[in-house]
Image (cartoon, rainbow, N blue to C red):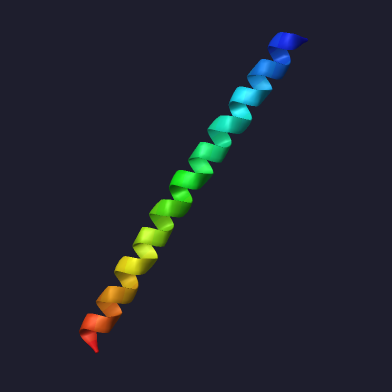
Length: 41
């Protein structure tokens, strides 16, 4: 039972890390896109 909980905890932490990194990545992409639009105008 304890092992199961530990695995679950690790999975949740991994998911959160993945979500955070993908969020940061998409925000960077959005910033880059906005700068490109500004440069074109």
